[in-house]
Image 1 (cartoon, rainbow, N blue to C red):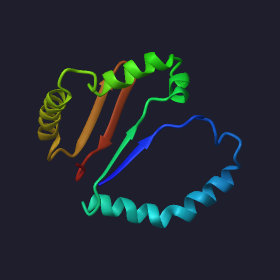
Image 2: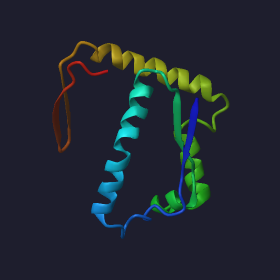
Image 3: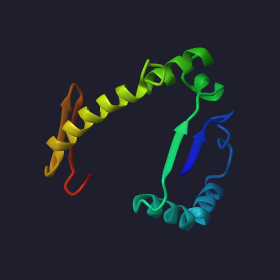
Image 4: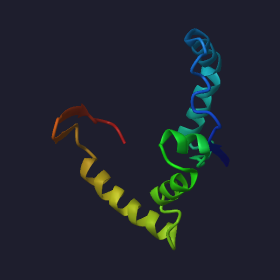
Amino acid sequence: MLLSFFGGANTRMLSNVNPEKMKLSAQGSSEITKIFFERVAKKELRWCAKMFPNQANAQEANMSISEYEDFFYGAGDIDSKDPIVEWKEIEKKQEGICNILNGKKHLRIVSKNTNLKMSIEGRK
């Protein structure tokens, strides 16, 4: 099992990096990245990645660190009495949505200022 935690000190650390150099870096690691995600997809590698609340992301959200932590832990129900119970409820709701969508070919989302159509055929 591979656990990854994300959170940095500066969300804009690559702002002044030449895009061509960033492209070269991504190309250089593309094969290992492809292998990594293939192994995850085949369930040969178990991977869990999670953001960690930090000052940089709080600043991006225009929040104090304590406000951001409250938001962050609340969003994942981590601050609830029994997060696992909460997560299982979410799983049930998601399963219901999946059951509705399974076998469908197209999805259309309509709301104020939105009319989005997409193919979902063969997708999970």
